[in-house]
Length: 185
Image (cartoon, rainbow, N blue to C red; front, side, top):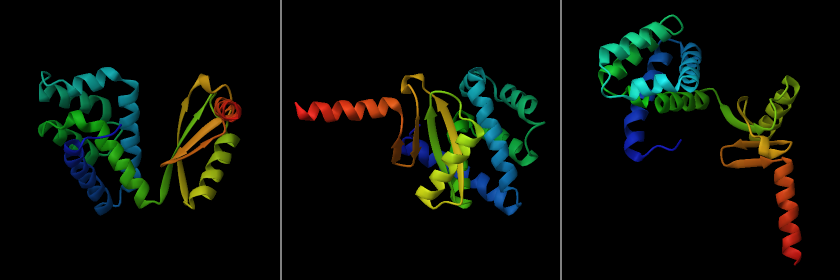
């Protein structure tokens, strides 16, 4: 998801403030886990996203929902941060703020994000092979995999790291063969 300049100007300070809080309390790992939990919760519950983004839902109702859903799972500082977003009427930016925080955390830990698309869920040995390949490609110490399924690939995988794309899918191979054959005619 690309942010507009205005959106980026608003969300980056919040993500940086959360990172600063995490670093000053030596909780970057814990906050990273909490943010991943929140993003997963938002991903699996579109209704929650709608309620948080709805300006007609009262702030106290939003806070009560957040307390009920995330309080037992996240650090108290993270919960207070979420409540602050509600107070500042920025809770609708929760997902991009969390993603920006993850980007800051990856930068801090020299971790790259590899987006892997495959037809079926990767097995653990396949995941490890992709991680090792990405480490070799990027020279990074750690790799975070974000996987998604696409049955149109037919087989193989597509790995995207930043602007680099490694397409070893059957669909990609067929497209390259088609382009080669077309260039001969």
